[in-house]
Image 1 (cartoon, rainbow, N blue to C red):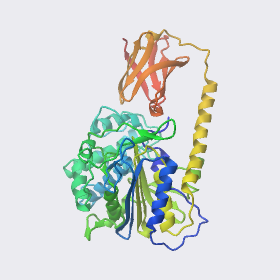
Image 2: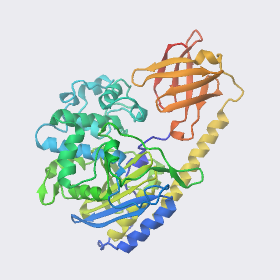
Image 3: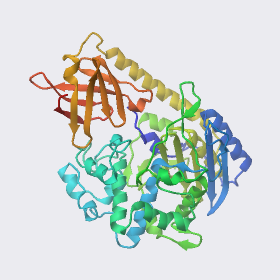
Image 4: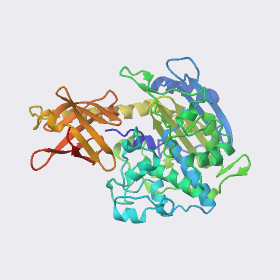
Length: 506
């Protein structure tokens, strides 16, 4: 199943390295050319609305909205239209920690339990030595486990506690594995070390002094702004259609920040200014620089190398990714949450930053626009990034379809369940994910667990399938029998490596 919120491709914010390209002299911004580039990309990717900001040498040199806030209305996107940022929120958490490092309240290599005494990981080595740095660069050994937070009923601390019950998927500190719940834990460290909640600290120490007047940390706060975007996804016909809002009713350091393009321009000026804004230093250059420093290499497969035009390296930092772009090192990140995509990109040597926010789910529009603007301002040969990225994605989509066809070809259609339908019904439990119900209704099975709900159809042997209009919520359910031949447990392909044990029959 494709990652829910942040796939590797979503994380690796800016793309495109062509080492043979000459690095020319930077050029002044051509506003008309940027306007045309954005409009071309809006059409190419079927995006309803977007806002774009460009900063250079500490100034906003371009700021504009395009299209509409919703396909169901005519209100235009403006530079002040509010968008949820998804995982671009993580950099606000690491900047908050940089303040606390300056104050001596936190160290990047502090044991996590120095600040959260109850924090645990299931592996003894990881549990004994896990540091704040490990959380921030995604190397705890714990895989994504997106369903632990996405549409789950638990608050931030409970989600972190439950993550500690999961087995590690890779050895501690051996591999990059994008993990949002560990950033939720980092936000709890901010609260414990500062004495105030993460969202209050971020608001007081970042939003207010930077003049980010629309920025907020919950959906409820965002709804107080009349100028806010609605989310969309591409329908079966390839056109944008409304997508239900994902609500952040509780602040979450991993993904709940909302902001406008104007706000985000100020945010990038702060970073490109080494922690100063408006002539005033807010955080030390050294503490902020640590958040931009490569910490863990990100492996690149053939698809990623093709998509990003053969980068020489890609590494995760603290809430950012470092990648080389046609001779320029970039610090960047993207964010995806239901109906929205965000792209933040900085070229520190050129003192250049690009913000692209839009109201379409998991699109490459933001990436294409960012690359077009970088090429223009860095004086690089222009490329048709819309066509280039679209071609790569078509190949990837075909590869996924071919894989699905191969799986269907291997399906054993001549098999039947080994048990009567009623034998699979009951309550199943996992220490981290809680209880899941399989109910029998009129001779058919139905699964109920938070985000995953719906009827089960027999697939093969003791495996059933839950199919949803949104493929993120489709899964196969594989029942395991005990040596005595009774139904003992189940696994969901949507949550790899996790078993729910049967605890109660109907």
